[in-house]
Image (cartoon, rainbow, N blue to C red; front, side, top):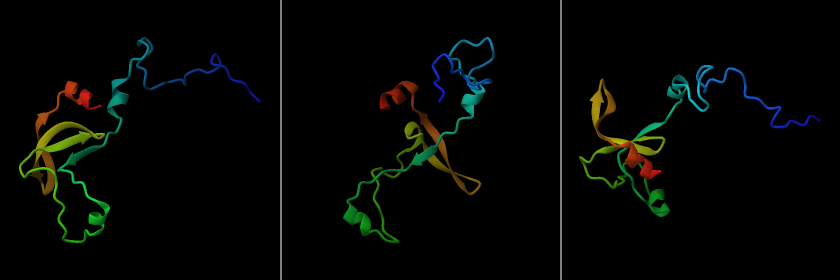
Length: 111
């Protein structure tokens, strides 16, 4: 049975996260960072239902949301609101036109 110590363990060669040979410790390669996938979603509104009301839903039921018509929609990145906007139609597909980008300081308060 082999016993590895911290001295025996080394980082894998060609570590893509660290940039170049002369890079400072902890410097991240921007190209690798830019290729990390994130989930983007648009939130029209929310509703809170009791389970009995949820079980009564059927085709044609209407669920009332907490937003008024015309209010901006939230654009979320990994469940964090980063912008607000309005729905647009682009070549028969829905899109969002950003009307406000949430400042980074405000986003940090939400974490």
